[in-house]
Every structure is written in structure tokens, then in C-alpha cells.
Length: 354
Ligand SMILES: Nc1ncnc2c1ncn2[C@@H]1O[C@H](COP(=O)(O)OP(=O)(O)OP(=O)(O)O)[C@@H](O)[C@H]1O
Image 1: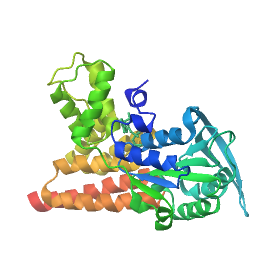
Image 2 (image 1 turned 135 degrees about the horizontal axis):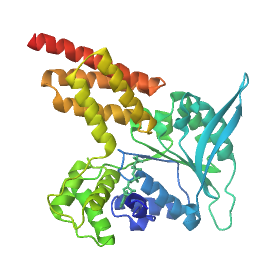
Image 3 (image 1 turned 60 degrees about the horizontal axis):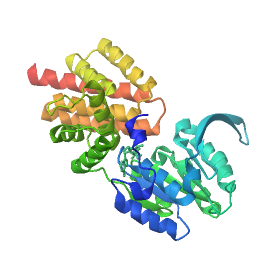
Image 4 (image 1 turned 90 degrees about the vertical axis):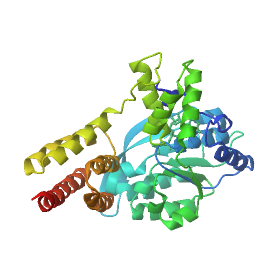
């Protein structure tokens, strides 16, 4: 088992970080009820961990007996029938899913599937709460229509169901949904906090972790707990005993994006664009989120750019990220960004150097 799973705290009173949020959640559960909740914060800040621990606090160990199911759902619309495939993780008390995975049909998932689930009460009611929890991930990626449907579900079935949602960008969640939830901000941990978590894991694994290595891992992780743990585990595989000057390896996909950025900077031509497209496609088929690819690519380009062009690159990235949210087929938008950037950069180079 990877360390990120092995050392994910299972209970609110066992958290190493975000203890204050954990304490407040315990008090809330102790009152006997729990409102709809929205956890928001950057990737790897600890949202999922808090949700898992919250479920355990509400329902006890039974919430950890999880069944994973991927099945097609048939939805009858007035004009036609559609079928969507959705993966759910469920226990007797809760169901977890990522409704934005189905793309533009997300509205039907909320209107039909989530509504159906929200209606029913938990299977095992003996000594347990009378409501069931629906955990919805990445609600900020849901379309506005789907979010509006979600709002109606929240109102209508609040007696039988509580929604526990998570997202990265809370400004993309419509106000009526936000205002019906307890919004919990899970901020990115500081470098010192990341080091504290690394020290905890190293102790559990009986490893001696030099301070300077732990500091470099924490800094390279960009305040993302998951990345930090994965990096430390990679360092462990690469070499043990650790040495203070041991190199901290980046993930393969990050090295690949660095390579793509170099390709773009070396040559701006249709042929190079075609090659870059192939590489971007490869990242997508390996399930890397398109927004992450774009973000990382821009950060890599910025490192290589003159100050004057940095502004253009950032403006283009914002524009194409927005288009990616609005439209489908991320590859079109990623490729369009690269094409536009190549053209702008070439023009600037000709002007600057002739
Ligand atoms: N409070 C905590 N105490 C100790 N370790 C933690 C804590 N929160 C998270 N971690 C560690 O960090 C890892 C990543 O956290 P988690 O999956 O909760 O982040 P997340 O915010 O849900 O990320 P994402 O938005 O990318 O899914 C966990 O697997 C766990 O090992």
C-alpha cells in the first residue's frame, strides 16, 4: 500500500494537520446533526482525509466498509433515453461519486441518479443517524445547470440526506449552493506543516529523515501533502539510508511536461505543434486532469520566458482554461493554447531579434 493511503488518518482525533477543523467537525457531529458541507482548498491540502474521518465520526467503522461499483445508468428523458457510466464508492450509510466525470450530461446525473439516492434512507438504521450522506467530489467542475439541480435536491431531500462536497475552486460553485452549505476552507499546509507530516510518516516507518532532505521535499511538493508523501516514498525507493543532499525526483508526468515546454520554446512550427499535440494526448490518456496539464505547462514556459512575454502567456492560459471549462474535448483547447502561444512567441521573437 502506498504511504498516502497507509498513513491517511482515519479519525478526526488522529489528524496530524488541520486539527482545528477536525475539532470543530467533532463538535458538530456531537450535536446530533450535520448540515450540508462544502470543503474547498487546493489539491493535496487534506479535504478527502477530513471527509473520510467525518464519515467515520458520524457512522462509526461501518462507513469504512466500502464497495466500488462502475455501472451504466439508464436515464429516461421526455424525448430520448440516455445511458451514462458512473463509478460509485458506497457503504451502508453513504455513497461517493464524481458526477462531473460524465461531462455535459452531468445535469441528468444530478437530476435523476443523485435525486434517487437522496430519496432513500440508509439501509442499517439501528442506532445510527436517520440520514444518509452523499459525497460529491469536484463540484466546481459541474455545469451551472447541474449545480442548479443540486441546489433543488439539497432543499427537497434534506430530511433524508446530507451532501458533503469538495472542490478546489469555490468561486466556480454557484452562490445558492454555497449559501446552503457549511463552507470549510482547507488551506494549503505551510512548508513547516508538510515537514511535520513527513516526520510523522518517517517515524512510523522507522526511517531517519535528515532535516535538509525533508525541507527540500516539502519545498518541491508546492505545499501539496500527497505530492510530498509520494516524493518521500520515491526517495526511499531510490536510496536508503537517506543522505542530506539526495536528489528529490519529480514525477514522470512533470518531467514530460518540462520536455513539452522545451519543445515549444525550441521551435514554433506546424510540425512541432503536431508533435506536441501527440505528447499532450499521451498525458490525457494517462488520466492527468487537463487543467493540471495546462497549469504546469504555463509554469514551465514562464521559467523560460522574458518578462514581456510572460504576461501574454498568462493571459492566454487564463483564456484557454476558461474555454476548457465551457467546452468539451480538452485536447482541442490545449492544442489551441500551444498554437496561439507559438504564434505570439514567434512574432515577439521576430520583433525583438529580427
Ligand atoms: N490532517 C492530516 N494529517 C495527516 N496527514 C494528512 C492529513 N490530511 C491529509 N494527509 C495526507 O495527505 C494525503 C493527501 O490528502 P487528501 O487526499 O485528503 O487531499 P485532498 O485535499 O483531498 O486532495 P485532492 O483535492 O487532490 O483530492 C493523504 O493521503 C494523507 O496521507
